[in-house]
Amino acid sequence: MARARRIWSPTRSGLSTAGLVDAVVGWHLASVRQAVAAWICGAIPYVNTALYEGGEVTPGVFLIGEAPAFQLRPAVKWLRNEHGVRRWYIVVNDYVRPRVTTRAARICARSCGGQVVNEIVVPLGTSHFSTVLRQVRDSAADAVLMLLVGEGAAHFNRAFAAAGSGQVDAAAQHAHAVGTKIRYTMPTSENNPFARLPEVPRFSVTSTTISDGESWPPAQMSGAFGVPGGQDISPQLSWSGAPDGTRSYAVTIYDPDAPTGAGFWHWAVADIPASLTELPEGAGDGTGAMLPEGAFELNNDAHAARFTGAAPPAGHGVHRYFIIVHALDVDTIGVPADSTPSFLGFNIASHILGRAWLVATAEIPAS
Image 1 (tube, helix red, strand yellow):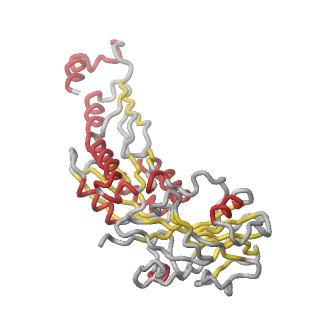
Image 2 (cartoon, one colour):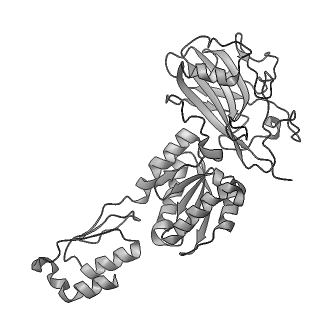
Image 3 (cartoon, helix red, strand yellow):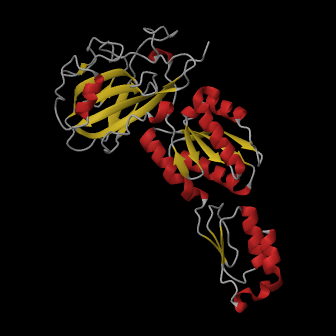
């Protein structure tokens, strides 16, 4: 900026008439943009391409970058619909655009059925983020929205990535939104259970046992695996809005964050008739007494044909449990009762019309 003043100041009033400069184009932060606009004073057009905070009305200043609402809403909505992200943690600089974007983020999160669980304001130029990452880890947020500018953004990105090696335990297990470009770092390296499945319409599922994005109650933890208070009781589920042509349903509960290389299947029920749109709490007790006629439970990864509750390893961070209702185009999926849930899933992929899901969480602190 100082160099620009030395070159242009003597001829500022005659820039356009002398034909030396037709316009100024730049990618500038708010403070620089305001200084450039004031110095040019409308003599020639000034085009700023950077993201900005919105509300600019200075004559001759043209801003082609997106304002906060347009930056955030598509990404927040996509992450909510495709990955169940509802709980956001914001790391923000005390600066014009980040402050405005934070306000927009709260609105976007609420409009998409989520919330900002916490936000931390750090000074411009911050280079050490170990304390911030510990707070992110302890918050059980689903995603981080990073609203830092300059070198601070680079330092945070490096610290966030380094946390994945164990420096800050579970911090790298959270989604990370950098500015408006999403870098979604699923736990244990992109273990998104929908990543390679057919894209189909989503319908609705609710539960009186668990709210989407919340922690399992004690009854849904695993007493069989020694979790204190665990009872291995399957959740109540109700669903609606399945696609036309649905002839049966399957229900699965899967933890993609289990340290197995293949996740952990907690429950799998097949051949639920299309006329049924609810399972009562405790239906996965292994007796089949609360399942509709024709439906059956498959062996889960604990080798039990029933629901086995959550039991993440102590100190392993937050695990997600995808509770999924699959709408199918066949009356019976055609797999033997002694099949694995993975084999059931393979067959579901050929007959899927739609899916509905909730995501529960669980964490057992290190002793």
